[in-house]
Image (cartoon, rainbow, N blue to C red):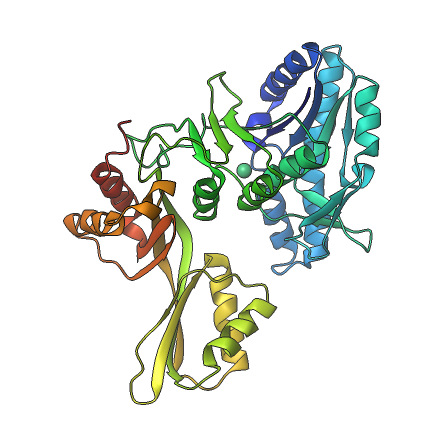
Length: 401
Ligand code: ASP
Ligand code: MG
């Protein structure tokens, strides 16, 4: 059996935890299995690298950021190999070049295209544990790229797919996927299983457990994932197709405060306005999420959309620089998205209304609404995020099976 195990930054934050991970991997290895380990940078090291970079240059070239980022993962894989060797088990660390993990060219947000498996297979045949750097790739210019924050999950899934692994386990500092972030909702409960689509919505909505692209990849290649804790041996949550949903309409509530609303006010009301606006943003790689267009008045209309806090100012700048057919652009970062997700809701009316009722009871105003087949999202004031999550969680009684 071939197992891919991925451990996040908190799981390898210090010497003790590195040895803890080393032992868990060795246990698997000693069952006779092939073990491929994917690691993130230790603790908050990636954040520290950003701080260091910004201290030198507030707008560092993205290529150089990736060059810098890759040392974080490289450090943890090398130390892990040393720990395993110390425990008497042969192990080898490999970075994106050594494996050859080919990605697209975009620095800071690359996608993996192809992974050469030869080197890894060769090392596994020598009965070594193979430890691979998460989060990084190489592009056609032979430069390092990174896959976006949290991208190590995606590395693990891509490796599992490329190696046809029998299991892909994502170890983190929580026990699995919860009905809501347990730090924000006290009654949150761990789910035994979620579908890819539910996980995808939760990941995109900032549930913070898995990188969203890792779930996309897992779905595409049918890689069954297990999300579990590196600190204990509890079962975790399985992410797979058509997982039995405990007959629940809604499986989780997510909140995302990394959201900003950009409003373009007094836009000329004529064909092509939305196209030109969002096309300009897309060209600058700005992802927009919810979009709202007001009913026109006096030949003008307003278009509001949400994007990440980080992208909001840049979006406003792009609009100001490229267009002159509007009155003003307003950025509001003090907003948050709160969403309910559930595969069961597509066949059930009234789920959205119940969510709105929970917010009404809590006297929380809704500023924007968007829906998909298995999700309802509202935009509210950031200060109300936790209150809203709790109100909705209670309304749907998610704390009880
Ligand atoms: N170290 C990277 C980050 O902090 C990648 C990861 O943790 O998955 O974003
Ligand atoms: Mg992560």
